[in-house]
Amino acid sequence: MRIRIVDAFTDRPFTGNPAGVLLLGPEGFPDDSRLQQIAAELNLSETAFAHPLPPGGAADWALRWFTPATEVDMCGHATLATAHVLHSTAAASGTVRFTARCGILTSTARPDGSLTLDFPTAPLTPEATPDWLAAALGAEPVSVHDTGPHTGDLLVELADEAAVRGLTPDFAALAAHSRRGVIATAAATGSGYDFVSRGFFPAVGIDEDPVTGSAHTALAPFWSARLGRDELTGLQASARSGRVRTALRGDRTLLTGDAVTVLDGELLVAR
Image (cartoon, rainbow, N blue to C red; front, side, top):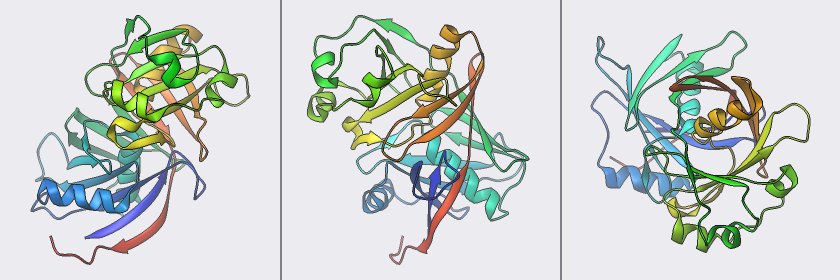
């Protein structure tokens, strides 16, 4: 198996969110245990595995994502990374359709070299602030929303950008109480972006994710409603940092970003 590591939601290497990408043959996926072992070995936020499907169906590729600890239902940055590999190697062109646990997803190449993903919009449900949240996160929430079944995160609005950037969460406490993770967000005070966020997912083996595409399927409707615009830019303020351009289209959210391949190698262990 050929392994590539791609930095997603960035146009510069060693920034954005690195994802492992393995394009498999038409015979399909190896055993789940082998997929999990490979993802654990790479030890990135997610590793994507994809194999081509017969022509004429609803999708062109089957796609799965694994953290170092578990399989997840939805992942934006590893989908962007997979689409980047398909286009940069001429394995695909134009729009690519993926079938995944969260349904049919598409990726479309843009003239400027960026890629646009079409994902389901997260259904946001307001919640009372859990008793444990402020202490675990290290800041007092302004509002809290559940992000629905595909991600299962808590979207937590904080007072301002400085509060988001200054967070030092108790990861053990977050892991004990969250289904997948907690997304902290606030309106932007800097220029060039509309909102800022950070994502913490210790329950699935990722203390802080550098840039979380799937989180923006919740951030897009949340901030579009508050800012009165359907097209926004989000900055995920991790140490590596990255930007996601969002476009709200009702029950679908478009996520646009760049990607850079930084490593290309081969797995030397049999299936």
